[in-house]
Amino acid sequence: MSEKSVGTARRAGGMPSLRLCVLALLVAGTSVASAQDQDPPLVRLALVDLYGLTPDVAAASAAETAAVLDRLGARTEVRWKAPSDPDDPRDLRVVLMPGDPGRLLKRTVMGAVQRGAPTLTLWVFPRTVAAVLGLPTEAAGSRTPEERAVFVRAFGRVVAHEVVHLMCPWREHDASGLMAAHMSQATLRGVSFEVEASLRRDFVLGAAVQADRSLQLARGGGPLD
Ligand SMILES: [Zn+2]
Image (cartoon, rainbow, N blue to C red):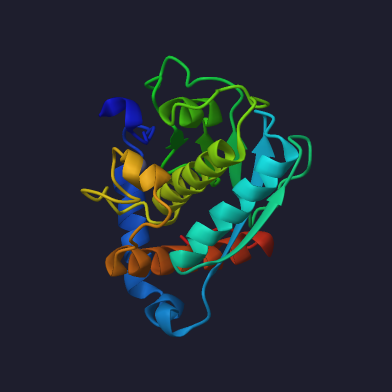
């Protein structure tokens, strides 16, 4: 059902060239060829909360997001930052939006990325996530511990879905599971979920490419391509 979907905003015309450059990098990058034999790639998330999660839900949401990405094969560091805090070029920014998706997106979109953008940012819409789960949509809504657990689980999976898009821009959606275009209630709510070996392999490759790119940026050398 469309109201249970995880949507993705794409800028027309930006994707083909990005696909080409990423694929070329995968072929040419010697460090990537052996990525799976190396330590898990580091994924650094900087969360900016414009929605206003309560402290307990914020802490649990960060931990859950890191746990999902770790299952995909990364080593994940998550920090919260204020909008005015300086950006670290190694970070992938996760912006928790305060309201519903705007008119350019479907109102049922839970997360979005802009593929091909020079900086790595994803947007998540906690109000929509809560609404899809049938929970109160206010940030300080009186959720029971079980409701909070359901929200946190879904939040981590929605963010992980969008992180995969940013790390693996060549990758299309899967028919089901974490990377389904229309994430099912079972995937959002389930206590556990399957991680396909191919998804894990792709993510490790993509995250390794991004980790190299981030190091270059942090050193002031510009992106690899
Ligand atoms: Zn998607």
